[in-house]
Image (cartoon, rainbow, N blue to C red):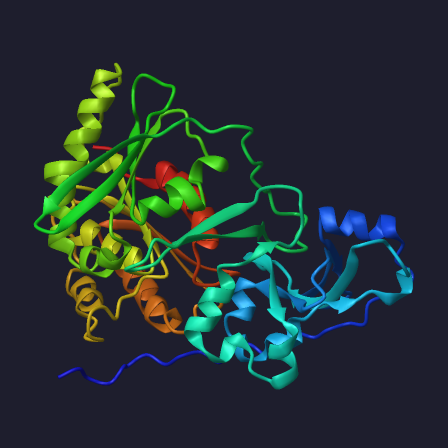
Length: 419
């Protein structure tokens, strides 16, 4: 029988404050805001003002500002995020401009987009957010909130249908914090080597491989949820290491994600017997020198992928002695927290085991925050590990985790024990 959850859930953030849009915007002002959002610092405040402008020809719908980290909590109050018609501008032809100014937490990282909701839903109070499935379908129609910079195309594969809709979002990084060193988007990214492999009856993995320019590969980054980071929130858009190989892997069928990432032994056998032999053979075929020591391998993942990374680095250090553990779903599979307890029982590492672990969780990870705080406490006591834990200013999403993958990888390269 499943015991009650011993970790509490944090409070849901309040609806963000809206500010009346100034009447003095010119068409040129709106065009500039459409290209890149206006973010203004507020004096003595932990909030910044975000202004979005959006031209629409759809008289039957209202544009809604989608800020993934926040709107997720307020999906039953989508009207609060509605953009208003900007009437002071007068006639601008076919386009009707809509504008919203809203306060968001300073330093927030989130995907941002525009959702168009039929006016009839606003008028009769039957907003899509009240129905989880309707909200998911609405989210799949997202358009970019501004036109410049990186735009992420997130595909949605539906079970039993041929539908593969694509939502398009802007990444918002560290809002209003101009001191933060950002990552520029690469002008191009190299093609990934790809393969499919049946690793168990009924389970086929897709795998991708990035080979660096250098002949000698210094380390290998193993990335769970590989399809996301290879294609949808591409790691290589921001990060192309010169001497690190990156191996991405995930089930071909998205519905098998839980069955795969929730089974540490299945992951271990898949990596040992299929994924890594394929990557090594391909690298050597291309004239690369492939690393052999566990200290040269790093496994990474978020949510259930974080659970998998924490499990592999503890139970199978022969595969990877280093891990990037993000927003780990330690409750899996039945809120028994066996993996967390296993870490507590193995504070003293065996002789010769020197792990490096980068651990993080989001400020808006309200359901997983407390169990990850406990994991941070346990890792800080681990005798055979160099570790760091942090809270990032974001939520439970791949955009925040992509930043953590990059920063965590660099931290591990500077902190790991090399055998």
